Image (cartoon, rainbow, N blue to C red; front, side, top):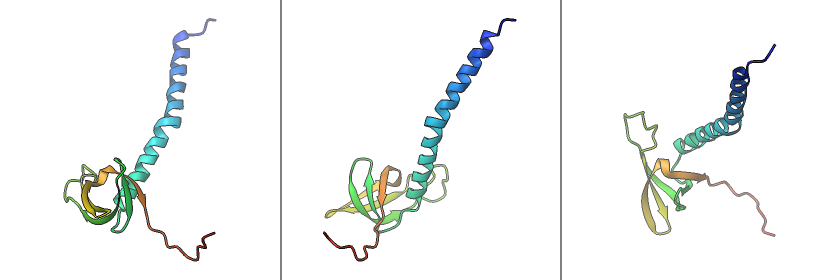
Length: 108
């Protein structure tokens, strides 16, 4: 009894899709959700790095109200970088470095 070649190719494409899902799509989705949560919990005094490489300290956060479609990513954040104040969109923040308390750290 000959096997059905269509059934074999459907199984092969299904296996390839499953591999792509578990290796590429799912981890990216999880990482994006973690980053969105981190950016949503941004506080005054946090040190941030933007997608363009600008490093600065958060001075003020202006949140837009009402529109839940954007998920808060259109909010404006005022940062201080050196002697300059810059206003950026919250969605352009790449990384947040929260200040940690340094206790009894010896140099050397």
